[in-house]
Length: 360
Image 1 (tube, rainbow, N blue to C red):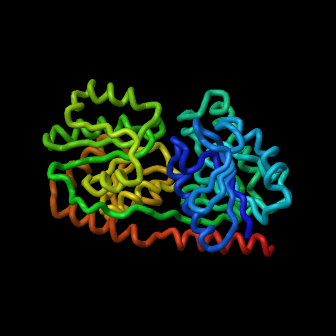
Image 2: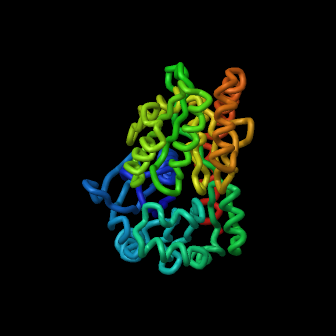
Image 3: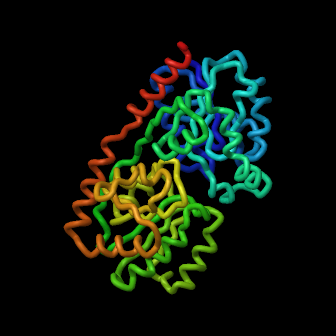
């Protein structure tokens, strides 16, 4: 098969997140199976127009905000008549390929972004997206659609979608050889944006320190909230026990995930929460908010716990860090849970869907 993917960013983009990891892994594995895969995506400072990454051809055809309005011109120049299928990965703004593409289109909708529109997206686009997202997505409701979680499936069903396949991602990190830290250690790993509510992590940690004064907090990631969060750590008088790592690469990430005892993840909403499985694959449970996506990737008492606010997150973290047997048991079950997912299985489900759509 010759498959064209559209995605806002690619895996090398400085602001790549879980959606980019998911799409890249599927494309990479499809390529390994012998399929011809090309990604059409946005440029970033210093990026070449064309590049091959893990066997996947990357075409960066427009800037991060112009990419959507230029998708029609990209289609006519690079795709029309040359591919069997188009996969449109939607994680905020759609590319509107069903309006002009002659090929069959499969939308891969990570989440309904809702509250996230105002995190990392400039004002005019954010305002437009927030107030029109439901209407824009209805353009795709008759198409066979892929989602990463039951939460997104249920959201789309409320918009009239019927042909929905839930295909979950996996983790591609391995546990680091180092054991857990001597001091009780909490970790946040992800983008530092308002939708991730990392300020709740800092507030939770302040409460933890009241009961466990030798605890530590690591914050790994970058984003527009970084300076504000560093100031908040000072204001809360916890900065001596908090370390900001900034961006961490694929070598450093599993090290931090393996050495931490618990990851905190109080996001507003997620498509699936791929970082949850990455933490679990390193033997680290996750305490996250009981919200869209996270309630699908976190199972209470198996690979972490779901909570509702800073108070309950603090209480659960203190409970686990104060009980060695309980935290060790949860770390072991988190690792076992992560083994249920793998990219080969995920890719096979995509491939089967592609073949059915093309045949039909």
